[in-house]
Image (cartoon, rainbow, N blue to C red):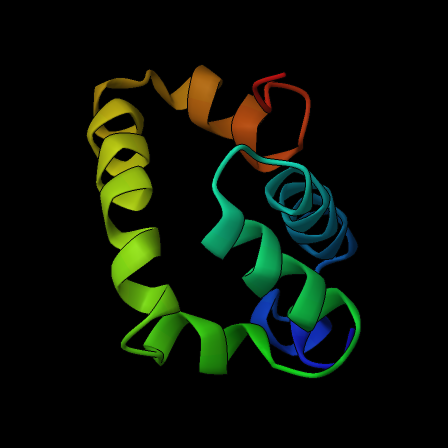
Length: 90
């Protein structure tokens, strides 16, 4: 999965979290997100390409906005737990 380490800034925990999120998306109920995640995992598409794609980018916007709204309400401790991967939702 080229590019994930670059996006994570070389941070192993962030890279691991991105891989876990992609795995979850690859098994989601949303067929378009499943397709996107599989393409990224298979190296057919980079995460940057997916995020900026008019098709996949639009599909990612709503869930990201939901996440961002929740993230802004988190305490610093909750944010740290999320960053370390210990609080990723099931």
